[in-house]
Image (cartoon, rainbow, N blue to C red; front, top):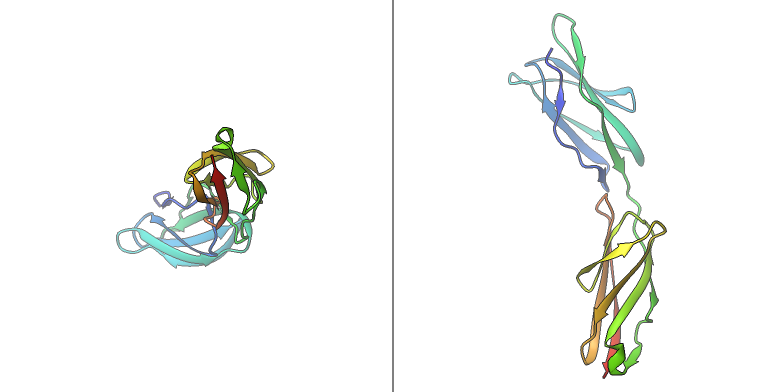
Length: 173
């Protein structure tokens, strides 16, 4: 049969349920293989479309679909990888401390430094992207306004897990 084609899967997900969709030869029998094992079987519709729902366990997985026509011919899709990562992110703000009072014109631009628990996460400080090193450390310089400042620090990992923290600073020029 026509080689099965799997529609785009996310690189990572924070929910265990996935739907593996795609197309192959009309009415072909289709098997979903996860990590080399057949976990689900179904049948393509009269247009060749298929939707196979599966619940992942935590970790990285290899996904493939095999199709078999009525004559017994088989073909397999390309291999896809997906990571199921339900673990929450953590953010630690190292400097400055929440509630700090910042005094002096030379301190208007303040470096916010911290650490995120997953180094592949994207971090924003005050709406601007911060560089994250291989150990999860990040820093971003922001400009303070006179008086009360609330700075939001947000992080999102590849699977979509999110965390947000805020610190409040008082700035006196």
